[in-house]
Image (cartoon, rainbow, N blue to C red; front, side, top):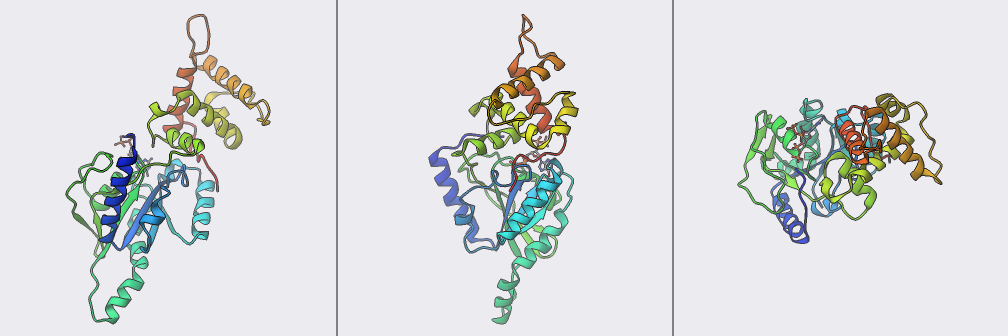
Length: 288
Ligand code: G4P
């Protein structure tokens, strides 16, 4: 459920997050593999300062494998530990406790050297709405934890969930707001459903998706919509070329208004729905 964030919400969410992070050993940052950069919150570096961090690229099943590999290399090149997961099926999830374990090795060693027995690795899952935080928590917990709505600044009682022998997970995720400032980022997030569509124009999102398809996924796109003559974007007449694609899809799918005019809203909805429903294929909307 995408909601709107206001400055007060953000300030409160940030304060709460900083409080939560004091109790934990490892921050698990969750991103959507289709938009691995856009689905990060810019504040995460500040909020997670000093804590080891595991970056989980979730929804790996929905993203283009080549792009996911490129992103994994990119993030690892920036010193992050990265794992790919599908929280819906559980793929990759079982390796999380061990990955967290590796990240706490230094802390545990320090404690052991002083003669203490380190407690379990305490982790928190953090991310913007819709990246799959609740799904992942349920997976790790092995049961359904009540989903807390993505309401900024709402506090709920929190509990630790035991995950295997070595890890404890906070049952409520850290919810951060999505990035709003860059319009391109906004379009990517709207396309994946991470921000309210009403905030953006449906046609604008579909326009962005068509443009991306024409650059990266021509074959899959042509196949899905049975398009025979896909234009090559040239940077000069792109807008008209993309409108022609809208027209082709509208005609093929019968998205017409009275008088035979193309119903662009319906075409847009169709494209967005097909993208989200993976009808075009596993796709990534940004590359490193
Ligand atoms: P959030 O807590 O971060 O807000 O996200 P949440 O877990 O609610 O997940 C958002 C949507 O993403 C859900 O779909 C969820 O099933 C789906 N999802 C989460 N992880 C994965 C994954 O790895 N792969 C795929 N394909 N989907 C994933 P929904 O349609 O909004 O809800 P539902 O009908 O599945 O309950």
